[in-house]
Length: 287
Ligand code: NAD
Image 1 (cartoon, rainbow, N blue to C red):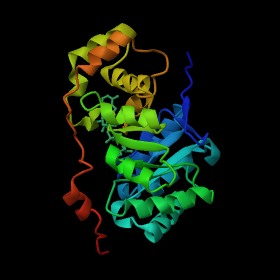
Image 2: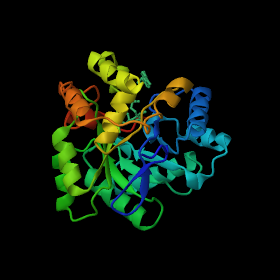
Image 3: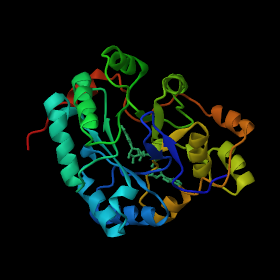
Image 4: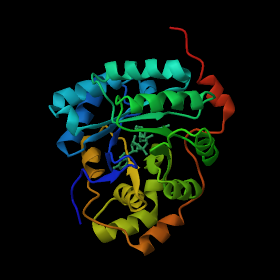
């Protein structure tokens, strides 16, 4: 079994995405974020997931620069926010993200949520991809009906869909749909976002004991067994390290069945079909 932290999946266009990345949602403190990125690089992470709306792209750039890692060794993701959606707006937002991230290409650019103009947004994303400015493109928080709508437009299929996923909300139907269609499943909130008592589950503690692993590591390994990309977030050096120690054990079918019983169909984040929320977040705030 490989112990390599840079184990990857191949997207349908041949691009390799590291299975593990560091998520930086809600990391607003510059020093804290820079230190988190530097620790992650030190522990072998080569994949970072940010978004325009997180307001921290410049700090991610600084952290990567201070870590001394060459740009081509990093897999960098950003996302177009709801109020930047539309054909022209997306191209402009993409350039702004490049400037903030101090790079001339992204490895992955995602539509953050299926806001009203997502088809026009996707048209722009496909053009950005075809012009070589981004190595792969995908979506986030798309349900089956959103993916079907894109399919009917006759455009490229998204390479990835980044969706809330954890044992309490495994998204089994969408997961199977994506598997059938060759869309890589990337999980956000892989640990339940700290909003859940998932990590206190006796089931996870019991399974972890067998492998000298923590409940968080068992959950992250559960995602990997399902062929998902994971981007757990932590600003703590010890947890960043802990969340990377996933490649020296495996869960059995029986472990997977036990964890499946933790499913309560509970979402902790937003619902992609909540039109009110999508509408509100599509209005650009006045500066
Ligand atoms: P997460 O599931 O990664 O949970 C993070 C929280 O879990 C931490 O704040 C901490 O409280 C806890 N934690 C982390 N490591 C731990 C450990 N080893 N032991 C115990 N507790 C631990 O949630 P998230 O940050 O919301 O999701 C991960 C990333 O996904 C984000 O940082 C962001 O990059 C991305 N994301 C994307 C979307 C989207 O709409 N596309 C939405 C939310 C998050």
